[in-house]
Length: 225
Image 1 (cartoon, rainbow, N blue to C red):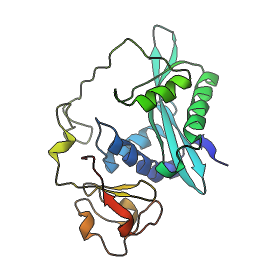
Image 2 (cartoon, rainbow, N blue to C red):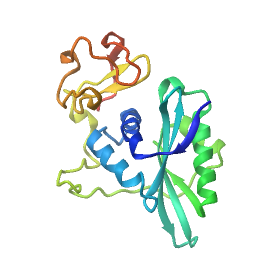
Image 3 (cartoon, one colour):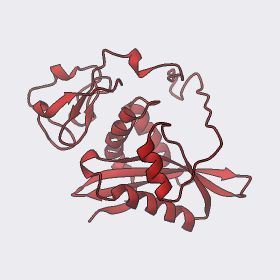
Image 4 (cartoon, rainbow, N blue to C red):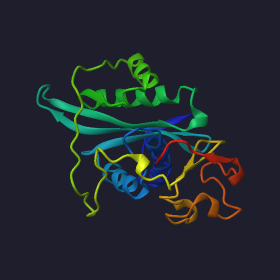
């Protein structure tokens, strides 16, 4: 049976793999393992920032969701931003997403949070339906963002007009067995493959770091990273 618990530092590598899958699917974000590690380290073990919940099944982490802590002066209570909801491709359709979401919502209620807010891609009707069936309702408010010029490491962040299509040379490949995506811009931390190595130049015995499928089980990933 799947088990849901609060993430620990030892779970960061598994969460990074899940975030790679999530950010490869979303319109506004680009996977970057170093940034995902930095972000997770800011949350995991730091309850004042937020809490990450993970689902374990068949001996590995197959899903996650995060609640980031804020304060609402309108409610006079703590509130949360729900982010990074993702379940591995081959574990979808088994109710794990619902279990993760219900667990996070119950935990927030028990810990004095007054509201949970989330954002989804505007055209992701499946996600809209999923959240609405779990008690979330659409807001009339509009989400606006301003990205600052530099991140904390001194590097320039991607601005809102920068497209994933600006990097056509970075052809990603997806594992047909589990949905893992190999991004040459990131490499593979699990097997010490550095960033910048094209899929075609990976060793012949390289396997998927998630399910151990061989290279022959990968196909070009259509979404631009």
